[in-house]
Image 1 (cartoon, rainbow, N blue to C red):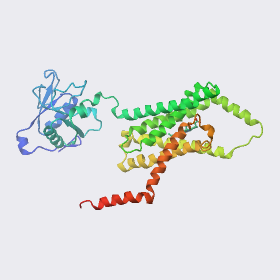
Image 2 (cartoon, rainbow, N blue to C red):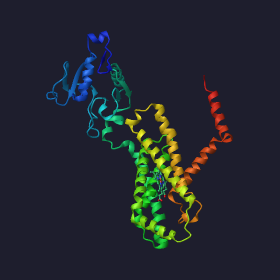
Image 3 (tube, rainbow, N blue to C red):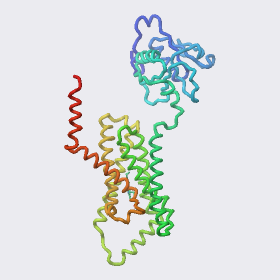
Image 4 (cartoon, rainbow, N blue to C red):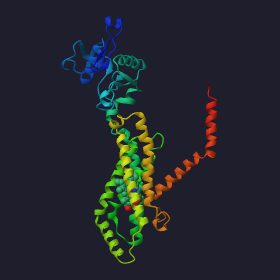
Amino acid sequence: MKQNGISLHPLDMAAASEPELLCIFGPRDLGRSLGLRLLQSGYGVTYGSRRPHSCGPLLQGAQVMTHAEAVLVDLSNNLKKGIYTQKPTLNSCQQHLPNTFPSVFLCGESEEAKQAVAHLASKLGLTVLVKGSLSAELEDLPLKLFPEWRLPLSIAVGLTSFFFFYLLIRDVIHAHVENKDEISYRIMVSLANKLCPIVALVMLSLRYLPGVIEQMGLVALGYAFLHAIYTFIIPICYSVRHKLISGVVDEVHPPFYFDNTEAGATVSFISLGILGFFLFVLLGLTSLPSVGGSLSWREFNFIQSELGHLTLFICMAHCYIYGWNKFLQPSTCKWYTPPGYMLYLIVSSVVLVLKLLLLLPCVDRTPTQIRQGWEQTQPK
Ligand code: HEM
């Protein structure tokens, strides 16, 4: 039998002659739709309600009673921590979990009860995802604020604080102490424009560590986006315009020549930045469930893995070319500290070299042999 696009499986003959009675906590929209499906499948339905006499019109064939009288499936939502600790053992909170139709999440303390409801739900044509205990898995879910964003946001705050103080000491305090220059106005745009891309790059690199969550890439994209905005507004800042005009006046006096290498490096690093940013946005868009869901597993994997590594590589190249002529200049180190992006590039390059070393045939042989030996001794 197929109704509303969902396959409903008729009950067996014994059940059809004497319908099994099921009780649902909550006679509201979700309870009603589940009740309708149950009735259509041949079950008897009883609703548990706090106010059984004023819960509105009921489905034909269903009855209503108090919570204490009805037991089994709870469709209510948690409003306060621990509010439902005295309640029966099962909860199906479709409202809180996106895309659960026709999948349902099932939680409960009793394995027996979970099996009974799983059996029932599969008869209704739903895919059941059996989860752990009620309190640990679902009941408190609506009370948590951005639970999946906590780790990436904490990492972002930690990195931002570290690099902020690092750059503050190098770019502002150093100038004040050594040259008596008062350039604290640089914190707002110039320092922020160094801080954002560095944090974005570190987070994008961390994103490719095993076990790191999706949200890390989205936070990194936010930082990269800020860098792009700052880059385009920097030329309108008074201090930058002043510096540019002074530079032009200096160059008017001979010898005035055009540095082809510098010109090539500038366009290369800017175009790599733009390309890297485009790929970054593509990565971010595909990690949104609505976009990612429209891709096949293969396509999603390709974008997140291959294209992700390419993005990281291009952004790093953007950064390398930006600093190509500064790497060996001692003047770039202030108080023995390299610029923030160099610090990142040094660490990431060392990691990359170590990774590549592990792939050398002479280093890789032993782990490969161990792996092969392990495979050969596996029982067939
Ligand atoms: C630096 C442009 C995208 C990482 C710079 C600078 C410019 C620039 C002009 C020099 C800033 C300065 O002199 O202070 C752009 C443009 C982009 C773009 C136009 C695309 C619209 C990116 C992306 C990343 C990135 C996606 C990686 C997440 C960096 C880093 C620096 C930098 C690490 C060095 C910051 C420092 O001075 O410490 N970029 N960029 N950029 N960019 Fe980009």
